[in-house]
Length: 309
Image 1 (cartoon, rainbow, N blue to C red):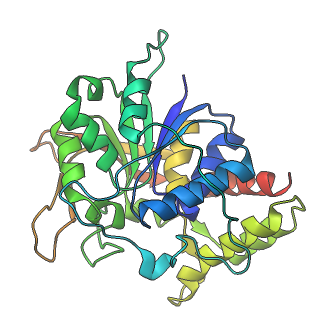
Image 2: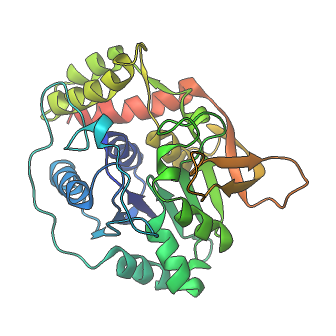
């Protein structure tokens, strides 16, 4: 039994999947959700990536909007393709028709596991697909052993001063997942900001010499340019930090906490409150420290290996 990936398929989502495939992690399926981009862009990116990199797991289309309606994207930062590039973009490709994300997740969770196997979801976007499952099929939600989620922020946000993107894109979804006591390991913004992608990493990918080295280098450079355009010398690479915790349990240190999410319509909407004190009942584990050099090594070794093929 492998892992399930729930994603809005931007560049760092792509990098996270490549980290897992490089490590030989079996992937049972993928569900897509509107997030960084509208669902049709997410579908296009997933289809192209699957075709280019030989992904043979089923890919299911999920929610087009947040639980309460509406769509909050990051297009103003990531552009209409959902991935910036210094040159080449993912080529157009059609996604093979699969069942819905809801049906795909239900079927996966209904599949019996062998002794010792667990149902683990790596969630790299808003949590609407998992929330929908929890509301409609709470018995199957109980079968989820763990959700590893890149989202939330202990400090300042990146989409608003208060909120990280994956949290504010669907605050009610996170509230639902928490209310159903689904076990969450949370890789929040400040922890992920410690793991950086630099222009030197682009050079190493570009010179790897494989058929996709130029594409991966251009996409990595486009991503890093988000940080450079803001006066930084590098860019935090978020989703792969969550992915590496699936294959290396020692790279991030976790601690228990009580997590809540602001679902108001105020300026603080989407703000996550992480309380590590013993006063409140713990409902998540959150990353408190990361071995940055080990994390970078795992991530960029995977990208360079893919670029060398």
